[in-house]
Length: 259
Image 1 (cartoon, rainbow, N blue to C red):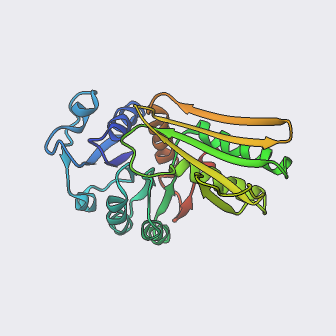
Image 2 (cartoon, rainbow, N blue to C red):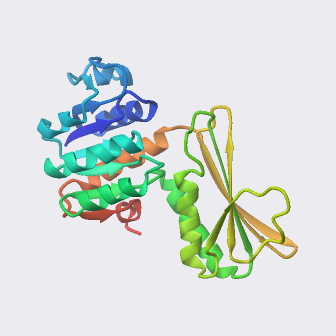
């Protein structure tokens, strides 16, 4: 499969290059914010592959890629999606912190090509989502609090995964409607309709997410911890292999997993 990678010079992009090569994909376009002119394979530690890193998203126009995997920044994703749609290139994006404009751009692209956007490409996180939906549905009067921890360099909060887990809880229970981002001062007693959201930042933590379900005299904690970025890259490569050749439309990792 002919594959393009956006964010190729970053940590996630390098992991995608390595795992995509192991899966037999041909990297035909590598777009990054640094290391221009460097061979993407050498950056990823797999040896030269004959594809140099460029900083031009427009390079996708003539790459003839079947799928582009995007781990970049919201502004880059916004610029990328119409180019991918015009090039008839499927999109698999794990970029977080998207604005409404960015989500709209993905939705417009999905009318022309298959698009899969997930804030977390981990198969384990999607299993966590299923467990959260089931638990919240069963424990109708328990309080819900979500805590996420990431490295000090992460720029968005709460994480996209934490927001996705909140959406899962909201779908499972109609009265859980209001997100409360941290507490201070005298916010008053906790209402039954809120979901507490808490973001911790520090060190080199790749990504920890815990959903706390708190009832009378008992509580449940559902936790996922990522200890290696390969879990996200693996999910992205698997999604790219799956989505190639699919009809235009919006997809999710749930579709890849057959859930």
